[in-house]
Image (cartoon, rainbow, N blue to C red; front, side, top):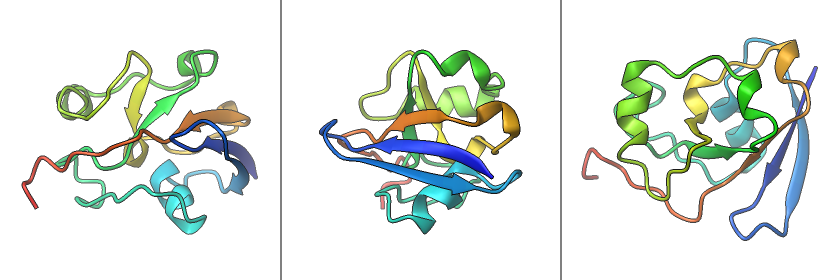
Length: 111
């Protein structure tokens, strides 16, 4: 199992969870009650699963695709270490990853 730590938008509450290799970070977050909508269900058509990866952990992630970068350009409160949780697949290299939930989300599909 791969350990992931979620930090709430206010930075106060944390939740440590474990997921299986190959599971998406979005699915793991949703299974544990994290407020990530994932409106487009991972089809790279929204940014409602935007998370901010801890700076110390960011280099462990594979690079974002051009399509993901395009959606991140539209994400509310995006930072240099922002990613879409639907595009992060759990691997042993990500064990101990820390992500913060942004304070707002923007659905670019207008729903």
